[in-house]
Amino acid sequence: MSKRRDGRVIRVTSLRPSSHRGQLRLGSLTFRCAIGRTGLRAMKREGDGASPLGCFPLLSVYYRPDRVPRPRTGLPVKPIRKLDGWCDASSDRNYNRPVPMPYPASAEELWRADHLYDIVVVVDWNVRRRGRGFGSAIFMHVAEKDHGPTAGCVALRLPELQRVLAALPRGARLAIGG
Image 1: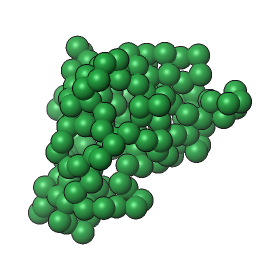
Image 2 (image 1 turned 180 degrees about the vertical axis):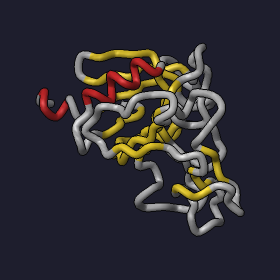
Image 3 (image 1 turned 90 degrees about the horizontal axis):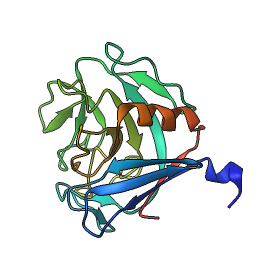
């Protein structure tokens, strides 16, 4: 694979089968990361706690302007507002889409008290071509201090996530499990 092409693909691998601990590589950068609490899974389903296997486009970045500076990246960037949410109700017409809060169906708040969503990268898992129940809100985001498991996302320490974003061009992809 050429250097130019390799700089567009972030590779995430599990350190052990069914482990929530992983490693992220982008070019010469290598960082510890957290993945889904049940590891990696080819047949991802809503609520299974797994990170989906595959290679997915990175669509956009959201950030908390009251906590972190606007990320430097080649991806589209938007500030998170207090009433931003993400629908995780598989029967709702806005499933796996941004929604205003409060939302009548189940939805996750993006404006969180903890710091996990200070920066959120939207991964195109079930976003542009949706299937009901195949999983929602698969993001790259800030990791817990101990790199605890995610609900299916990929999480890095804030400074490492900022370094990765700064290296990403438009059209970058996230390869989970390969």
